Length: 253
Image (cartoon, rainbow, N blue to C red; front, side, top):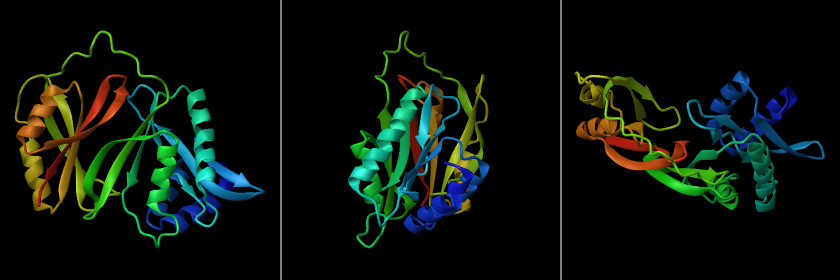
C-alpha cells in the first residue's frame, strides 16, 4: 500500500462496513507498513495486511481485509490471501490470527460470511467463539493459521503461580458494552483488587468483562475464576509453540 492507495482503500472499506472504516482510518494514519492492496488494471479491488503481536514469538494479527463488494469472487479472495501468505512465510511469521463476526444478512453488499469463507479457504481454523460480543446477537469467531509446523516444547514451560493485581478496566472498542481487565503479577500475595474491578465495571453498566492469561499462568487463572470469570476458550500457540493465550469472561448482567 502506498499513500496514494489510502483514500481508495478507505472508500472500499466504507462500502463494506461503515463502522470499521473509522478505526481503519486511524490505523492507516498511524502507519501503512505491512498493508497491501489488490489491484487490476489500475483499480483497487482489495485490501489486506498484518501486524506483529508484541511479546510473542512471531505471531501476527491479520489486518484490515476487505474486497470490492461489486467485484469480489471466491477466487479473487483466495488469490489475495495466497499472495499475503507468501509474504508472511518470507518474514518467518509463525502463526496468524484474525477475529471475525458471525453476522450474516443477505442484504449486505459485503457480508461477514464472505470474509469467513476467505479465511477458511486459506486454511484458518476456528479456535474460539464469544457469543454476544460485537452486539447482543453478534458473536466473535477467532481463527488461527499455523504458517509453520508447531515444534514440541522441550523442556515444558513451567507453571507460574504468582498472584496478580488489577491494573484497571479498558473498554473494548469494537464490542458493544464489553471491557477488558488488565492485570499484573506480584511476587507475594496481597489484596488483588480483581473482585473490586468487577464490581466497578458492573456499576458502570459494563455488560461483560474479559481477561486473558498465558496457559502457564496458573495463579492468574485461579484468581480470575475465584472472582467470577469462567474459561471460554484459547488462542492456541499464541505466545509461542505450546504456550497458549487462555480467555476468560465474566457476564455482569
